[in-house]
Amino acid sequence: MNTYLNLVSLLLLCGTAVHGQVNVDVPVRFIGPDDTRVLDGLADPVSGDAAITVEGSLRSQWAWADATLQDTTITLAVTPPVSAYTDGLLVRFIAPVNLAGKFTLRLEGLQPLPLVRTDGIPIALGQLGQGRVAEVMLAGGNFVLLGALESGCPQGFLSVNTNYCIETAPPFPANTWHWAVDHCADLGGRLCTWGEYAAACTILTGQLNGMFVNWEWIDDTSNHTHGADQAGRTTCNSQRTTLASQPGRARCCYHLR
Image 1 (spheres, rainbow, N blue to C red):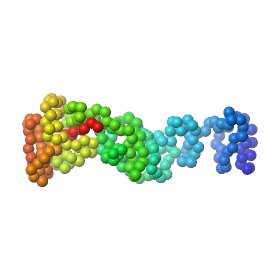
Image 2 (tube, rainbow, N blue to C red):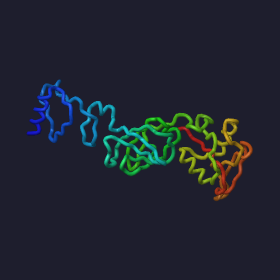
Image 3 (cartoon, rainbow, N blue to C red):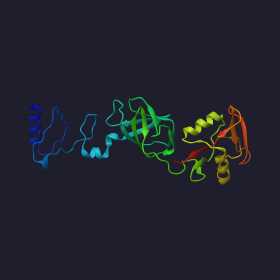
Image 4 (tube, rainbow, N blue to C red):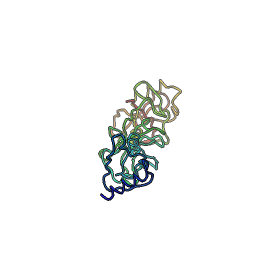
């Protein structure tokens, strides 16, 4: 009761505007006419249990974070800070670089969690580019990227037709077939089939870099459990089966969804 009377006295002494920091540990009750029951100048929240204005709610400043990247972990700094993870937590940030593949995301002071798409797999090329706004929600131990739809071929790929794109140039150095499968999966794509590779090679003649330099891995059937197929050594129709442990380059295909 004394706290309530002291607050009323403070308001009467200062007039209609109060500037400063007031800590009130009891409910505040407004008893004036409806059109005068307002509290102006409420600052942005600085703790998880702080009051928030209508403007602050509309701007969702509490859900905005500054992002930094170290290795494959994205760290988000939010105000007010979050002390524990809870399903349904929603955070927005601007991607510091082009992101694709296996990444983790953490709020400052908390452990990193996997960053995945709504279907549970890592972020694909073109879904989260540098400077783009990302919205993620915590659910089931993962940060889920919301509203990430691909449109057109990602950077470093060329369109073959309306269904898929092919990587302009394969990365160096050459490696095993198993590495090639993982590499393409990390980019959100996969190894090209024989038909996809041959069609892209023919249609995009002169537009693909590093063609006919070395064998390139493809995803096709082989007659031996330890074998895998390669293509593109001297022409678009070059093809052979070799041990999956042999070196080869990996030019990935990316299917538009």
